Length: 207
Image (cartoon, rainbow, N blue to C red; front, side):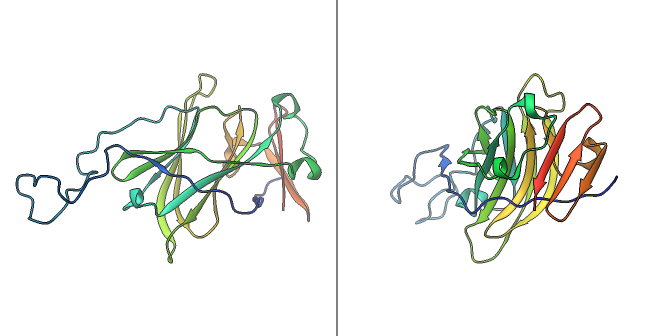
């Protein structure tokens, strides 16, 4: 059967800070050439890019992200790979952990929410706007594992509200829930959506 659907994540999670590239500037820093008197130079103007180094990272690109407009957290369901050929029960799906990724400014307009290691199971990246209005950003996934051939996946633009699901991933397969081309079919009922592959992989999400 063909169709699509999405599950819902758990309640809100914890926020995260940023890894600063330069020390905090004081108002009495000597004036740079061409800098107006009484102003403080922008530390991001000449920031050096820091490449993500974790096994799994969500990259955000947008305006003024370094100011803390968006916080990212992860809802994690541990599920061993040997069980990926059978659906998770509703009781098992309620057993979740909330993870706080390391936030790294990779360019003045790009943040990476990085997990150093990504064990077997399901990862739901969620974002929360820290402003009164929703924040728009472009998202992509980066994998740094030898068993995943396609290292970069575009997620696309999202408007981030107070609690927005960005992407769901099955590891170690590196399968994205919303990528219907990665599956061979799905089954939907009033309680859940199950997607499956011909090689036996099954992923069930409860509504």
